[in-house]
Image (cartoon, rainbow over all chains, first blue to last red; front, side, top):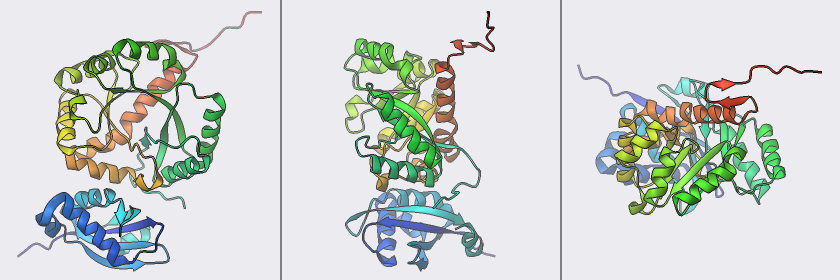
Length: 104
Length: 239
């Protein structure tokens, strides 16, 4: 039997002066992962957007649990989104969306 | 918005938060942000001639943000004599002393001097990165740690490996000058995986190592300190 790939859900908070939509933030994270780890790393990370909470300026993404630390590193190294200075902070990490919603 | 970011309740420290001392509202925002990100202790570099008012103002801001303030001074000596002079003049006024080593003789002197807490090397100039095996051996015999601000990965990878081999404590700090460049301790720990520092060591470099340095120096600066291992436990008052 093929073992199911484990995932991690990350709640992110975006700090920026300009309003940003979720796709722009996701693109910034993807390009940061790509810059640091290349195409192979990006494919292994398997980043997907789960939901966006505009009122909290938070978004939830999913990645492979093997690549969690690398994805965090890529997120921490993101200093620009859409050409403007921005910071993305990891608010919480969990293995399930239910546990993540309790944390954040 | 006060958040508890860390589930293991480690006490994190950022020993190099470069807040603008002339812009107090910005300094306040950065200290508040550090508290939100989960730091319990921040080291703010001050000028060697910093006034008591400046320090007490920062102490007030930090106590409001519920973080502990550590006074820090950065020296940029041109030669070892200048370093010795600076240490003689200012060591007892600051809790943390960091030395930016621009020349090899400064690097060697700083590594073997027990009054130096943190060794820094040039971020941009590869020729000025003197943290080799000999430097690591001197630093391991003294009490200094290697301070890392994120720079070229290949260079850091070699230095971290040397420090780990020689048991030199590593301290990670942000060196942030703006709120947008500040990150949480777990995020910094994740960044260090890029230069092959294992995650437990990275977390130690952000928590235990700086705390040990600060507590040791606070002990030394207290009026009860006499010499290493000797301190005053009580005073008899004679009429």
